[in-house]
Image 1: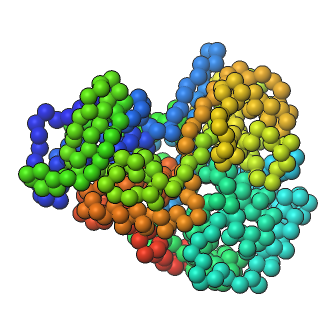
Image 2 (image 1 turned 180 degrees about the vertical axis):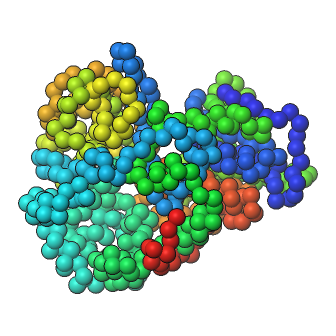
Image 3 (image 1 turned 90 degrees about the vertical axis):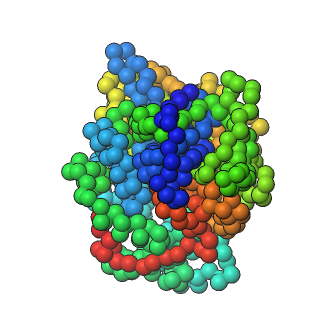
Length: 548
């Protein structure tokens, strides 16, 4: 457990600067929230509560000794995309933390960026992209079974009526099948969302997860018409909140030459793995005079109460090493724990809308082989769609990352590093999950079947990430609007941020931390979920108008 506080209590400069603030959860959102608060409110006392013995949440990079050297195994997220606008928030944070010299960048011209595969039905299929000529891409689309019917489906999409006006949401699978037929959804798109959400496209919300396409269909009566308009310099949608953020970023100082190059990369990570981001945030919080970090501490209950001074958030917590329950009072609380956990510790209001956001479990198997040229192809890796025959994927794998291609420069020993991801929504009904030995055997069997790899790995690590990726099911935005309205009963003293709400990616979480802190400091907003109230607001722009 870390303990660090200024010994002399401080007084706020104004009523807008709260004295005592709690952060629930020590994952990337919680760490970033505490860091932003410590900078923006240097006189506030900030306490971060984390139930586990370590900080960083799903960010976990492990260095594994291999003979005279070592390799980095990522047990969770492994890279960041410098996309606009959320990725720019992350790059600003990287600059503030002094991590610029630790960056490992994957160029858009690299083999990992240009070669991405889907396994269907019994072999790897390279997705069309800039790494091949136009003729090669056309030949691939015309010859591979995975693309059968996609051209005719795209052409006929423009003739289909847009959705009924009373249709508030539907699954991604339903949305794309309605517009393009089932082949594209089942064979291609389901693979993509196995890689992002480890989820079932027939349960995930189209409105929440594909908001731009949802808006394009309504405005243009057709997705293809809207995309073609964009391709020729026409109008495209952007969330109004994102537009305002981009304008703010445009007014900020120019980034260093190093980060300007990173902005143009495909993805980036760090020399010691993506976990360096969490480690550096933790180190900065340890150095801060106004932050107390409490690990191994479970928050029991949270409610709005009052004392002689006024209304406060009252909560209790218990350290693992201490049976005694400690009561606390805070001016503000920022909850970054999963929504269902918050609902369970805030019994004074009905947050059932948060309880309905489920999460999937993923088994991550990292393998290192001594042979440096063991892969039959090179690229970022491959994903598996829902339509792959069971005999080709009895392990229920989601995808395989070719880490040796995707993260060049992390390891100092020659060889081949890959990561196999198993489970996700396929394991939703499992009473028990495979153990480490079973997971290792499943991963090796999959690599043998798909890639012909029968070499025994030099090193292997298996980790089960329970309930790691929230699933934004159909109706997600409506549920978040309901939750926001109910959280208003805390009168702006309880706010939420994190991957249960506005995005599951690292950039999304860091953006959520920035937004919730900005609103708290400025006295704007009340819940962290205001963007859902009344539906997402859209603006339309031409791409050349918004360049950072």
